[in-house]
Amino acid sequence: MNTIYPVIAAVPESLREQTGRTRTRALSRYARKALALSAEASGVSLPDLPKAENGAPRPVDGYHWSITHTLCYVAGVVAPGPVGIDIETIRPRSSALLRRIADAEEWNLAGSKDRWRCFFRFWTAKESVLKAVGIGLSDLSRCRIQKIQSDHRLMIRYQEHNWNIEHLYGDDCVASLTCGDWRVKWRWANLLPEPHGAATGDTSGRRDQS
Image (cartoon, rainbow, N blue to C red; front, side, top):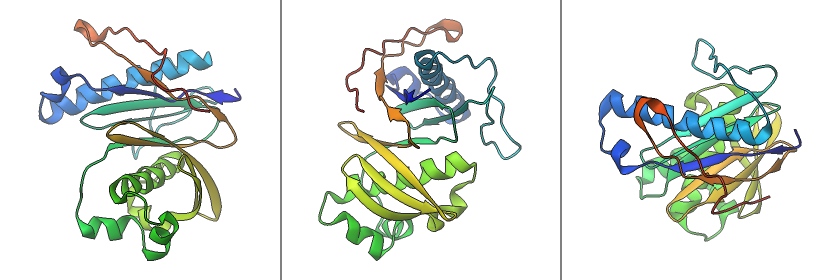
């Protein structure tokens, strides 16, 4: 597998209107539909999705997987090595959280670009690395932005290892993926929730970035 296919889908209004654990479970199921499309594109079968005691995904027959969900978007990806994916809706946050996500040296790498877009770029990039290694957000401060290659790629240093990150931007969101040395083809899917968890998917894509 030299190419991986991260799949993103917008969450239907019917799911957003749910609340509490019901919505959380529904979003998780929806994210797994995106994961299934990623696996299908790679010709991979994932009959089970085992997790470690801390909730981190375990590989299936040598294939690693990661999912993410927010109120507005879900995403999933399958890869032949450790992988993490994260997506967030771009919106204003507190100044204190800005300082928590990155320090002054890291922010200087960003220059004068849009603050909130950059904030969520950094946030999702660091979280994607922590997902790839199976560690929670408690280690967020140990992830360091090392280099910004372009609007779509940057490098993070964590545990004495450099992690390459690739980004995809929507009108109101940013997604980050630990991409290793793989070729990445992002796909947007139109997943239609149906009774009993059935769904259809269209991965013809609004964007396909490599």
